[in-house]
Each structure stands twice: as structure tokens, then as C-alpha cells.
Image 1 (cartoon, rainbow, N blue to C red):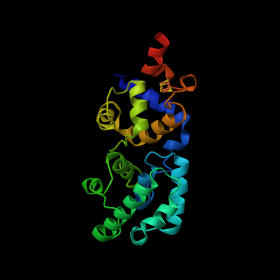
Image 2 (cartoon, rainbow, N blue to C red):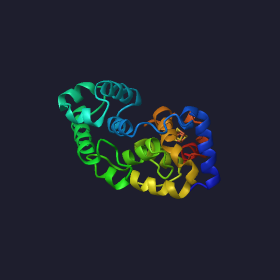
Image 3 (cartoon, rainbow, N blue to C red):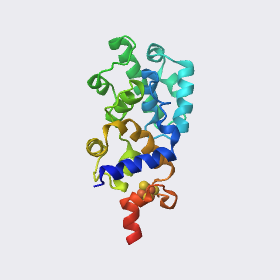
Length: 214
Ligand code: SF4
């Protein structure tokens, strides 16, 4: 387990490495677009998610319009992302529910968000952080889970456990930045085959130090 001082040092180095990820540019975007964008982003690279989101919202920019679109029309807009068939159906179902049950708005209620089809804690946490500007959540996806475990900030088997542990070891004022910083690091440096020689936090990383000792 890392000391709080070391954790803060790691976060500070990552902020310097990825300055665009904590300047607030992603905060307070339209909740509906953040929600649908996060559904699209599952197991998909950022560039493809952005491309698909643009295509989709150019044609259908409200829950009502998406609820009335056919799955085929939605599918045509989002062909750039993985699992576009499943995602097209899910997006239509979510939009229908938002339109029929919540007057076309995304409810700012955590339990209600989790009850939407295919929406889990990661999506809910991203929505509450970036669309509703809350500071109470850390969205843990595969990158956040992997990077946290490699560094040795946590020692966990699932993203759910990682999320719970991160709340204990990271000061609350930093929670809102963790997803973006660790995802960037996981996509660019701490990949499946990590580029440790180019990593700015290697001296604090358990994976790196254990390999150096081996
Ligand atoms: S040193 Fe290697 S394993 Fe550790 S965080 Fe950096 S890239 Fe990942």
C-alpha cells in the first residue's frame, strides 16, 4: 500500500504529463450526450467514440429524436465503435426511458441512473463527475483498474473493489481527475505491454520495481 504522500506525488506527475485531462474542459457537458457517449465508449478507443458521437448527435441530438429513430438508423451512425449492434439497441432503450419516464431529461439520481439498461457504476460515475460536476465519484474502467494495481495503489481483483479502495487511499479533492489521468496513462504508456522506460511514475510503481529486482 502506498502512503498518501506518494499517491499525491503520482497524481501530480500524471497531471503534468496529461495537462489537458484536468483543466476542467470535460466538466459540465450536456448530461444526455455524456451518458450516450459513455455507452458508446465501452471497449472502444477515444477517437472512434468521438467520431461515432458526432455522427449520432448530428442526426439525433435529443432523447426524443433518438427514441423515435430506428435501431438501424442509430446503428448506421455508430458503426465506428465496437459492439455497435448491442449499443444501438441500448441507446434506443435508454432514450425511450428518458423520454417516457423522465420528461426527456437525465435524472440526477444515482439509483435511477443505475436502473437504465446496460448502465453500470463506471457510466454512472462518469456522468455524475463530468455532466453533473459532482466530486464524489471515481469512474473505474479496465485502465483505471489495471494502472492502480500495477502501481500498487490497490491490490484488487475487480474494478468494483478497486473503486472502493481508491476512495480510501486518494484524497477526495483528487477523485474527479483519476479516471481521465489513469485512462490516458493506460492507453498511452501503461498498455497491455507497458512502456515502463517512458513512464514518469516508474520510480513509484511496484510492477516496475519488482521487475527491476528480478
Ligand atoms: S512503470 Fe510501467 S507498469 Fe508502472 S505505471 Fe509505468 S508503465 Fe505502468
